[in-house]
Length: 223
Image (cartoon, rainbow, N blue to C red; front, side, top):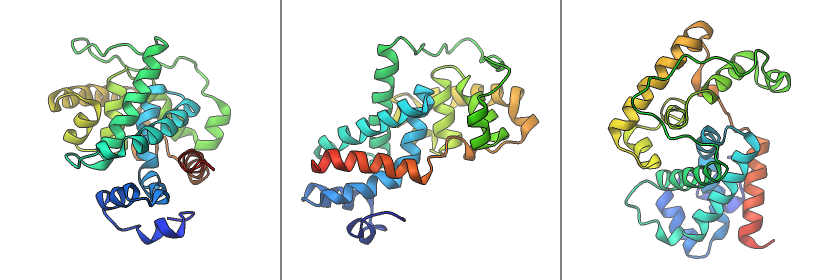
């Protein structure tokens, strides 16, 4: 919770729904706490669709602003984290579809073993993340649209089947099928050979977290 304002820190253990109520009651600064709780999940969800770090951050900021603007529409029928993730996914999908960069997932055809678009990964990214982490992220990016975000939400972010289905707006069976095929493709091409840990992919480290939080809070508070 480092870097969180004193007001948000006092609410650090409170349920999301209670924090939402206080934000709606006028304690706008507490929205920072909600962002910091879910920054990595929202980043990973957005990144799984955009396949671009900077655009994923843009999606995050817009998603948070959309969530704040429409906060009264959160009725508690689903978890706040699921509601927020769905907003981010919708924003990311809208962007890639406008640019013709997203192909509907073909439920009938198998996911082929991944082959690299280039034989040499980006050296700057490789130096920053380490060879195995870079290789895994690159492999996940190569999964088809539709399978990729399911894999990230389930195996990287750790959502349940029901949570991932709710976030993506699909059925549990669709999530299960796509996850199985994504896992098979990754296992065949990379995971068994590298032993890389999926949980380390697309980490959203502290400086980037602070940058997104500061930008959103400035927009919300008008500072």
